Structure formats: structure tokens, C-alpha cells
Image (cartoon, rainbow, N blue to C red):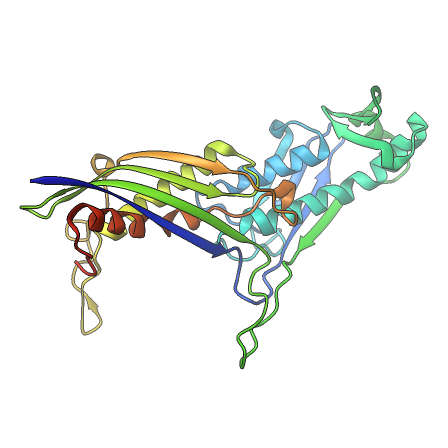
Length: 312
């Protein structure tokens, strides 16, 4: 007999290292033709940070992403970026990059203020132009301003850094500020359980994640879907077998990760609750999608057959 069940898993997760400094820096050089060279220590290991940091730079400077040249994770030339872990790079390196772009704009804004006869605080950057916020038609091309600054010996070179506000936990009370911001999520799973064989099939996962602001929604969906598949393996197929400190199943023939045949329908719901301290309101979404998946599946199994599974 096959029975179906539904379960929910919820989570909160701190963004960044726990109760300790974890800063990041960035350098930006804006060239004569409005090409931007971005140097960041953030290592892109497949999560797409180079793309997100380029987007943040492009948005802040008002140029197209095709003009951004990213140099990342090169300890010979790039500033400190911290570990690509703890779901921290969009939030922390993103803030560092945004701060670097803001410093690049300072000499340009000063020069454009003179050229347009507009107070600096009323100017904005977009579509390769610097313009009056109250009258976008009153503008000057970004390249013209860069060249004017160059002729005067002023270089559009910027630097920025960010370190989230945290504090160590008090040893006696346990109080403190371990993280500057948190991610939140709820996932729902539908499963089918074969009561004769014990086989569990996950039919659908609905994953709702608060990401602050989705700078790149497609990549956020990819993070959510990938995390759900990892959680699926953690719940149903993966088991690290140890004997006296020796791993007995070191290969993928006996350490079973989910394949495409095992992946259910995954519906990703992006919740945007702006994080005031994040770059354009963003915060991390790297690890959170993994966390509630297994609890949701286990709760669904319990709902289907009335048994709480606690081990393989």
C-alpha cells in the first residue's frame, strides 16, 4: 500500500561568521570609456558571486553589466574577501563593492555638479549618464565627466570595505550579537510511502525563502533548488559509514546522492523583505535552502504512516 503525507520545515539562519569579525574589501577603477574594473577577494565557487557583485557595481555606477570586468579571488592583487562560506558573500562583499562604487562617484559627482549647475546631492547615475534627479533630461554623459576629471588629474578610483556589526557571546549569560542579519524560510514537502518496502518518494517541495532582495532572481531560484536537492539526499539516501575513524563508503557507488531521476517538482517562492543593512536590501541565500528540507520530508513521512523516523 502507498500512503501520502505532507510536512513542513522552518528555519532561521545567521548570515556570516558567528560573533566575530568577518570583513571584506573591494577596489574599483573606472576607465575612460566607462569600463569598470572590479577587484574583490570573494571566491566564486559556482554560486555566482562574480555576477552578483558585477550587478551591484553596475547598478550603483549606472552602467551596463557588460562593462564590468571582475577580478576575483586572486590573493596577489585582490583585497581581503573572507571565506566563501556562511552564506555571507552577497551581503558582506556586496556591501564592500557598493561602498567602493560610492567612493568612485565622488569626484564624478563633484565635476558633474559644476557642469550641470546642480547641487551634488540632487544628482544620480544611470544609463551612462549623470543627471538631475528632478529633471532626468538635464544630464551629461558619464564618459565626458570621466575625461574632464582625467584632464584635471583626478582618477575615478574607489575602495570600500564592510564588516557586519556583531559582538562575542557573553560566557555567563550567552547574550550577544552573533549575526548582523538572519535568513528565514519555510518549506513544504509531499511524499509517498510504500508501506511494504519502506520506499519514500518525494513528489513535491514548495520552498519559500526570505532573501531580503533578490539581486539575481534566477540565481536565487537555482540556490533554492540546489539546496532542496542536497536536503533530499540528506533525508533519504546519504549516509556516511564510519568504523574506527575509517570511511567505509568513500565512493558514489555506495554513498548515494540524488540524481536527476530523484528530483521532485520544486516550487521556489522568493520573499523580499528588504534588509536595511544589505546591498540594495539583499542578504544571503547559500545554505538556508538545505536546512528545512529534511525536516519537512521527515514530517511528511510521519504524517503519511504515523511513525517518527529518527535513523536510517
